[in-house]
Length: 303
Image (cartoon, rainbow, N blue to C red):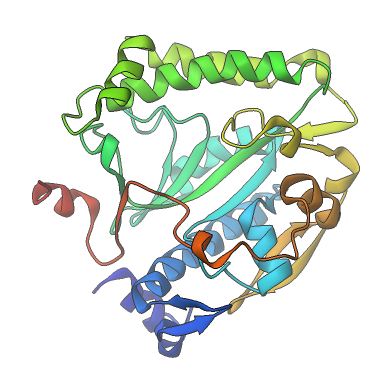
């Protein structure tokens, strides 16, 4: 039984959910719907554990935008993101080790020795979501839910902190790509530039920088462990996270911060506008997806 078949059998989503359709002038294939189904299932399991222990959590990034603008997934998106205040995040990472049983898996550098992303993921081990550049990294490549820690920050020093964190992230990334023989010249140069044999030390340095005690009780929160977006897109007022509301999201409800309007404006600007048609596509490039096959089986046949 595939994971999507299990999700239908358990009544999490109806069979009709997987039908191909057009949304916002974008064709949503049945294969993309399968990926969404795995994401929704991961979110529900995550929320279940958080509610069991009383952890605070919120949807973040495209998941907030999807809930507010589309009442579900952004049609051209392919993953879900959540965040937790640092205190809750660290407690969650402790208890979640035993709470997530197969096919679910909490992924951190302490549970998966070759994984050195700067934040945790919840994976479904019976599926595949593999960055081609990390096909030989040696960690779990199941479809995932990103779990980001929310940290207090100081806008005046945020730029310097991000520069330090970026250097550490690049070293961790280079380590995870080191055995890959499919890299282009530019990627190989970066691996040489940021080569490290101590990725766990780099990961722990990221967390120390992000949790600087001087920022405790600041009026601002951010996700300094994420350096993909510009820094001005990642600083929000603490009051924006003073509470939550649950909004419809496909066939479920997701929890978003009360200050979602301010958060979306900061992160995306005029978030009610759609991107041009030619920019509506999968947000994760260079990634191989297979919601029906476990990553360990997929890798055996990978070229």
